[in-house]
Length: 197
Image (tube, rainbow, N blue to C red; front, side, top):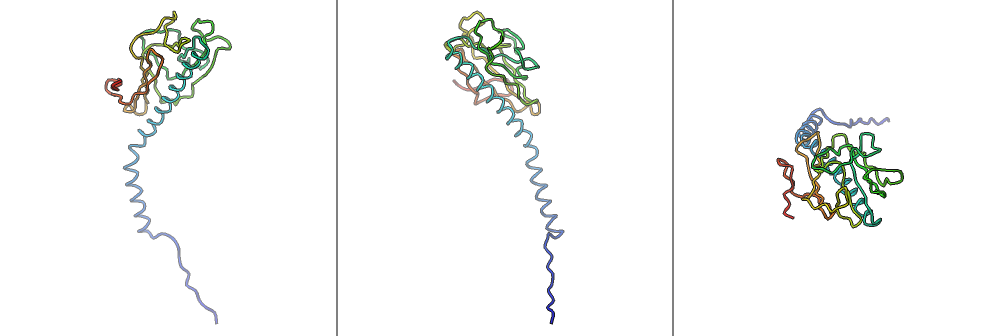
């Protein structure tokens, strides 16, 4: 005698599939608007971390070498400084920056002086610096001007943003002592840091 077995079908019913699609659609409606800001925030934080570590490197190298070390904004090719000035002009550092040991103190990148090239920033990243083309650290790790005198102005600020989301922005401040500070309370409307100290 041959036993007959009923075959059981495995899978989703049309109703189950429609319920799953409805839940996924609701989740996408909630998550999707915030996803762009999440990605932009990640790009801004990555750029800020790279800038922080580069400034710290420049300062520590100046102290270690006992001589002038410069961080300057890079040209579009990323192989030289884009300018050679310290002024009250705001400049874009969005192409990246270079760190070099300025052995001959001529504020220009020469052979065998390069310490770091940082040009792998996201295309949407924007970086503005309030004091033009370069930051010069003297042998004691303090900010100096082009003539080697101590730079005793107010904190110099970098503004780091993202073209994909104008609401995502942060700042870094460099003090005349050479210390760099990440802003915890950034005011977007005025592009300023509201930290108390």
